[in-house]
Every structure is written in structure tokens, then in C-alpha cells.
Amino acid sequence: MTTGRANEALSRFAVLDPATGEPFDEAPDQRPDQELDAVVDRARQAWHDWRADPEVRTAALLAAADAVEAARDELAPLLTREQGKPLAESHAEVARTAARLRYFAGLSTPPEPITDGRPVRSEVRWRPLGPVAAIVPWNFPLQLASAKFAPALAAGNTVVLKPSPFTPLATRLLASVLAAALPEGVLTVVTGREPLGARLVAHPGIRHVTFTGSTATGRAVAAGAAPSLARVTLELGGNDAAVLLDDVDVEAVADRLFWAAFRNCGQVCMAVKRVYAPERLHARVVEALAERAKAVVVGPGLDPATRLGPVNNRPQLAKVEHYTARALADGARAAAGGHRLDRPGFFYAPTVLTDVPPDSPVVTREQFGPVLPVLPYRRLDEAVEAANSGEYALGGSVWGTDLDRAERVAERLECGTAWINQHAELSLAQPFAGAKQSGLGVAGGPWGLYGNLRPFVLHRPE
Ligand code: NAD
Image 1 (tube, protein in one colour):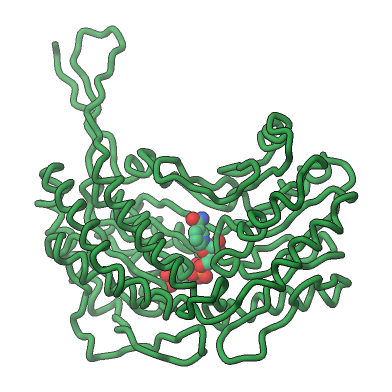
Image 2 (cartoon, protein in one colour):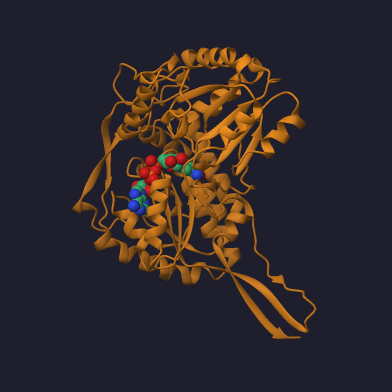
């Protein structure tokens, strides 16, 4: 396994610490024209051996998981430094990366006989696709990368992984850690600014593009892969709604609801991004969430007292500021926050908004930051309709005391995953698939493994 280090001396780009706003290191700005051909070529060569023996792959992936765990004290602080999240959350992300390698190492894809009464022996045998391009965003750099490379490698493909230019460093370190367990060329990390990702997507040697990021870039990725007809899996944006029912115990759920919205500074595709509360309970919900927003300790992720870090990058901070300012200008009120913190770095005060016009962009678009609008509703149907409105359909949740009733409401949510009294709790074993503009294809669990394989049918007389 390699980090695609050729020609590193040619060009590098700065990586900023979001807790200071200052550069603290650099990464290679790899040139697509000069280097991608060689990287994809190596991935294709490595594929011949890697695809051959599932037992060898299983052993290598288990060794890779051990190597990640052994390097957690180097990986986690670097992840916090470039991403901003509290150190404990970086450790959880590293642990999840190792767990995912183990999970996929343990799956198999046995041949499946076709029994339809004909006097033939016919069976489906699952075949890998070839070199896979994996492109990930900056909110969970290691966890999302492993969600792509673990199933792709377990299926017998090789991978070229491109992290976000905002968070290239922990991924590069991960690559050198995994080099002890994986053969050369099986997983290569390339770093650089655009058009590196676009060129990787369009490279004729790539047979599957697995992308996580915004819906707008996802559309560009689908178009970019069209000429080569590479398979495309897209995990895109979300604007998840939490619908509170009139029997909800506000105090009992407030902590969980708060963290479902604010974890990782709200930079979670499946964060709660809008809350619908019955009119009668609305003020109490706003108060309970605002209390928590005011009390939470915001600071650099490496400070052990910190529960919420900075926003990851300047453009994202500008987006959060813009959406919130627009809502406030349109008549919303900040029950907590509503402004940047007066300190260096990309810090934004955890913000709870009330009196927000329902058509405000902070409600209808994905704000992807520490800002939560709480909207009142009169009739439950109105809330469900509002939750289902818009282009996104990733997750959703229903909160109440009568679980059967909550389940009936959850059934009506148009999304990929619906929770009751929690949000964004994910198992490695479950499918992950957004509806509408939130994604294409399925990741996670055995479905994620099969997403990296193609059926090959062998048919012979009995
Ligand atoms: P982004 O779309 O700007 O970038 C994602 C990745 O794509 C980065 O590595 C970027 O460098 C690369 N990229 C940019 N332009 C490209 C192009 N033309 N071709 C190929 N690659 C290109 O997203 P972001 O701002 O980094 O991440 C935030 C978004 O990711 C949010 O919308 C969030 O909801 C989404 N997200 C979705 C999931 C999910 O599983 N559904 C998970 C996490 C984040």
C-alpha cells in the first residue's frame, strides 16, 4: 500500500487547524495529469493477486484492523487537529474504522444456485469490479473512508482513496499504518485540490466510484463517471427532521435530541437539522435545547474539557453564518447563539432558532453546522408533510412515549432510516441508503459488500 508520493516535491498545499484558523502542516497537491495514470495502473496490477484468494484478504484486513488500533494514539490527535472534533470523538472514529475492517473481513459471498426447475446447474458467483475510486468529505475522514475501502477491499477490489483537501493528513497517516498489512497498490491515497477528484472519477481504469459528499458534487460525479460507465454509489446530503409527538417527555429526551443535532458541531449528514414540535410544547423544547446549547463547552478539540469543537473550515463557517443571518433578518430569534465566537479559529456558538419562517434556507437547505431551527406545528399531518418536503431524504426521527404510535408516524417518513427516540444510531450491519437527492445505491452491511461486486452466472447441463 502506498500514499502516492511520487513527485511530492512538486507542489504542496497548507492544512489549517480549525481551532486556530492557521496552517499547521501541508499535504502533497498531486497532479492528476502526471500521477493518476500511474496510481490507477498500480491499482489494476495489484488487483490480479488481491482478487485471487478470499482467505488471504480476510487475514490482511484483520491485520489492518489491528494496525489501526495500535496506531490510535497517533491517528486520533492528528484527526482532531485537522478536523476540529473533540479528541474522544476522534478516538471513537479510529475505533469504528478498525471495527469496520473486522466486520467486512468476516463477511463472505458464497455462490448462489439458481433453482427454477430446469435440468441445468446454474449458479451466481460474485466477482469484484476492479480498481475503485473512493472520495470522501471532511466531517468523518477516517470513518467514511473505511466505509468505502473496507467493503471494496473485502470484495476483492483495489482502491484509490481521495480525502477532502481540508482533512488529508490523518488519511495519509492511516495509509502508512495500513501499509504494514496490505500489499503494495491495494489501497493508495491521493491528495490534492480539484480537479484531482473529477479526474479520478473520469479515469477509464476506474470501475466503481463510491462517493460521499454534497448532492451538488454527487451530480457532477455521476456525470463524470458516465463516459466510462463505471458503477456509481453516492451518499449525499441530508436535512433530517425530528418530529416530536404531543406525548413526548421533553426533559427525558432533550439531551439525546441536542446531541443528535450538535454532535461533531452539526457536521453530520444524518444530524437532526430541524425539529418540529407540537405548538403546546414548542416553548419548552426551545428552552430545553437552548439551555444545553448555552451550557456546552466549546473549544479546541485537544482540550479535554471540550464537548464541541470548531466548524471545520472557513467556507463552511461562512455558510452557517449566512443561513443564520438570513433567518434572523427574516424574523427568527436566537434562543441561544446566533453568532461567531469572538476568538481565533472557526468557532460558532451553538445556536437554537425559534420563530423561523418555514421557507427560510436554514430550514429548507442543509446548514451542516451547529444551528438548529425549532418549528411549531398544529396538526401532526402538517409536521409529517413538512418533514417529507424538500429534496433530501436521508434520515428522520419521531419522538414520543407511545412507541407504537411513534412507529406508525415513523413509517410515514420518506427517508432511508427512521428512528424512534433517537437519531443517527447506525450499525455496521445495516444498509445505508438515502432516498430522493440524498443518494444512489446502498452502502453498509452485506448490501455494501454486494455493491462492490458483480454477479457472474455459470450455467452447465446437469
Ligand atoms: P463536497 O461535495 O464539497 O466534497 C466531497 C469530496 O468530493 C471532497 O473530497 C472533495 O474534494 C471532492 N470533490 C469536490 N469536487 C469534486 C468533483 N467535481 N469530482 C469529484 N470529487 C470532487 O462535500 P463536503 O463539503 O466535503 O462534505 C459535506 C457534504 O457531505 C454534506 O452535504 C454532507 O451531508 C455530505 N455527507 C454525506 C454523508 C452520507 O453518508 N450521506 C456522510 C457525510 C457527509
